[in-house]
Amino acid sequence: MVRILIDSASDIEQEEAERMGIAMIPMEIGFGEETYLDGVNLSHRQFFEKLLGGDVFPKTSQINEYRWAEAFGRMTEGGDEVIAITISSKLSGTFACAVKAAERFAGRVIAVDSLNAAAGERILGEYALRLVKEGRDAGAIAAELNEKKKKIQVLAVVDTLKYLRKGGRISGAAALAGEMLSVKPVVSVIEGEVRLVGKAIGSKRSNNLLKQLVQKCGGIDFSMPYALMYSGLSDDYLKRYLHDSEALWKDRVDPEKIPVHLIGSAIGAHIGPNGVGVAFFSK
Image (cartoon, rainbow, N blue to C red; front, side, top):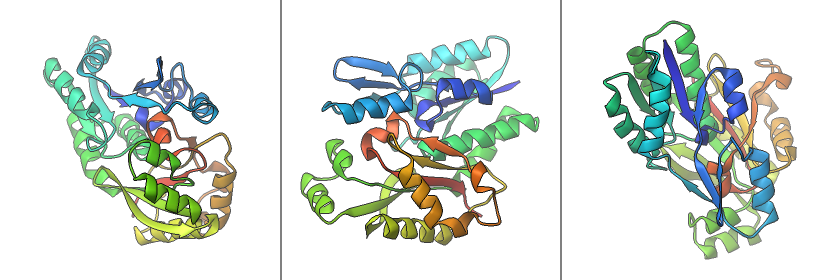
């Protein structure tokens, strides 16, 4: 049997992972001297409550070789094979640690670099589960994931530059100028890295820009997994985006059944609240 293991940078919490039939290994997140396991003893909502309720900027830690090896040992002891899907190697050393740990298991474990994070990593995991149900072997599944991941598009509007500044992603001067002008940057994950692909003044313009960029990517392949995501304690911005981008979904899917997920700590620490994004395989 082939089993799928994915890290919590995919924004899959432990309880959801159990319902999905996927194994999840959590990243560690620290608030000062307090350390939590992402999606295990710190839910995504609790993370944003702590982020917005205090002055301590959280720090996430990569999953080290020992923790990967421990998980691989448990999952292979019955003779199963494991495919481990990780956050982009350009964003974290987690993939390199998974590869080293996999070397101990004589080909029974394959690590796959998602070259993504958040919902982009999640939909690759969902596709992996689909391939397992089709009866593919581990080698064929890994090869298919490495090919299809090239088609994954992640686009998101960031409401505030404050957390990107706190995390050292942009300069204080750039953040201040952006806040004063109400600039809302649109970011994408390109070749495993987060890059600025546009910016707009105000929510409506940024939502329209996001819609245009989705269309520019070739549109959404609705036969493959896709998802919307948001950050913070309210989904008001997400509802606004759904309204502004109605043309993307109309006559293709039931708006009530569009998968929506709350962003977790690995990415949420850098974008802060009121971010909205979409992840999909392009046509």
